[in-house]
Image: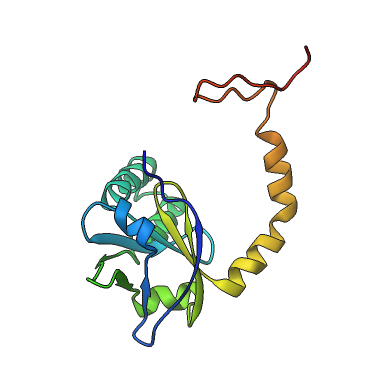
Length: 161
């Protein structure tokens, strides 16, 4: 199973293009992706299958008759753009999305298993610092009441004997 994982520093060129890491390009089916505003100050880069699943989830979970649903639709669907990965492995990020994410030059591309995020590197560092306590608390909660048993066949070594 190929996963979009890793953290890659990159640079936006003068035309608003960024090169996707070669490892990510080798995993992506075809030469197009969908870009939209992320949940924080970043851009989500979605492979077509993930994008279709995301749209289905948004459409099945929202109603045009609810204000909160319209907000979600406007943030995810409204600014979305389908872009092509060129022969050099670059995607052109529309100006409106660059403005939203504060992208000007130095950026970071993060793999998120089945999609990617593109961040302004300074905003990402600030985000990491401001969410450190939340991360530590969430990390502890992952253990829950029981022990983690990996699906790979290895036995958990936690707990009392």
